[in-house]
Amino acid sequence: MGAVGEFEGEYAGLVDIGDGYLALATDGVGTKLLVAAAIDDHSTVGIDCIAMNVNDLVAQGVKPVAFVDYLAVEQPDDETAAEIGEGLRAGAQRADVALVGGETAVMPDVIRGLDVAGACAGLAPKGALFPGDAQAGDALVGWPSSGIHSNGLTLAREAVTRDHEYTDPFPPNPERTIAEELLEPTRIYTDLLGPLRNQETHAAAHVTGGGWTNLTRMGAYHYEITDPFDAQPVFEFVQETGDVDDAEMYRTFNMGTGFVAALPEADAAAVVDATGDGRIVGHVEESDEGRVAIRGLDIS
Image 1: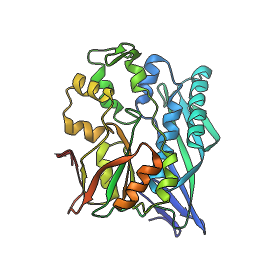
Image 2: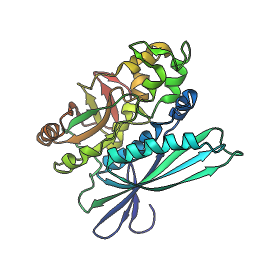
Image 3: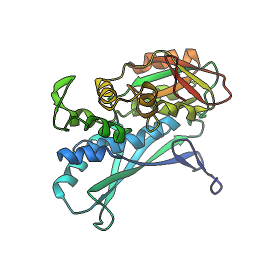
Image 4: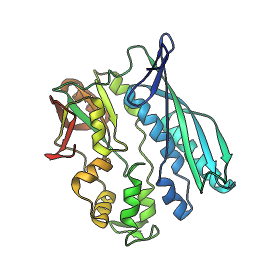
């Protein structure tokens, strides 16, 4: 607990500013940057940087409004910096946030290669924040991911490079390379905020690091997932090449579903209708501890 008027939510720090809240989130791209570096293409990682921040704010019920980035490099590289800027601008446009500035630091004694991170500010009127706790009996609405997003890349990289190069054709779709599939940008979910605020949304989860175990951030319940979205071919490829079991896949990756919200059943149906590509993927049950089961597979 910080000073009076300040508190930390599940996904962002919040400051009471009188008639509403100022929210702040910070995150980076992680080891996805190593895939970008391996093929010398950083044009999409800026989208990931924006997405990882704004999606966390949406999960809190906050509208993202402004973003600043921080690029730390071993050596100056104008071309790479321009590519990262290209992605940041594209991500900001998708998220409808202002890209208000950033900082580049050259630190050869600290950095090997580069790292990119950012911070996002958002606003929420009083009463607009999601309470943060699901309720027994809630329906769980999910929305598809765009692929592997920006989590679990350490496991994915180790798996696919056992017998392949990043520049090899991606077996399920040889028109793309393995690197292109891994670098598919993280989906941005800011368009869900309006429909979720219009209904009795109890809590939401951005499915990031820790995979489906992120649902337990909505409270100590049993989350029974009966109809998740199909995982994209990249996940099957990682699982087969890395010999990863099903439970570990769901504990690491989004497996095709990138965002989940808990609402009463009637409100869940209304959100599905309002958002187009969402659907009810499961429900919430009473439990003494947070547990998640995917089609009967307990991954807790």
